[in-house]
Length: 87
Image 1 (cartoon, helix red, strand yellow):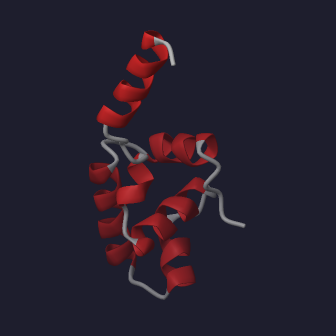
Image 2: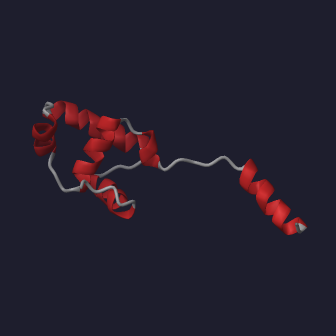
């Protein structure tokens, strides 16, 4: 093993892996993120998940905070880039 390869392996082991932002979301927050990514309104999401619109809005706010984003457009872009669309 060369010293360069040993150094690369040491750095790979030493550096903690940082999970993708969506991995810190609860299951319900991930559902809301995916529905927003599919272009659904909060009212539509509320009906699909049998929740109040206010609850869906709260989940949306938590998703934005946890993912350090500020708009639905940011969330939609993230869903598309990370292939998180609903099946």
